Amino acid sequence: MLDAVVGHETKTLDESMADETAAVAANRDTPDAKEGMSAFMEKRKPVFNQ
Image (cartoon, rainbow, N blue to C red; front, side, top):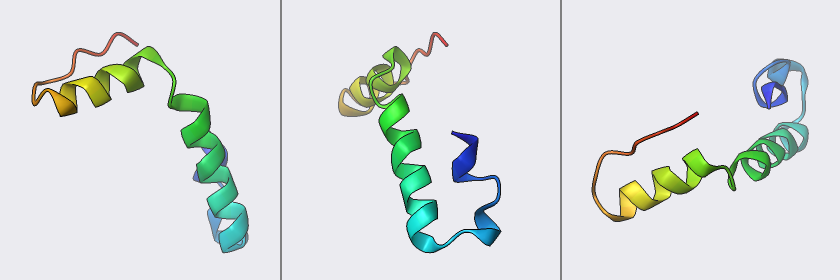
């Protein structure tokens, strides 16, 4: 996940976008990600566990 930030100044746009896509994919199915989405849809504050 740090690849999306570290070293970005020496990467191409395609490389940076690939790093960001990988980071999002790695985190989208976590309980906290699901809680964040649910809280947003329900217009309430999220309760994160991790």
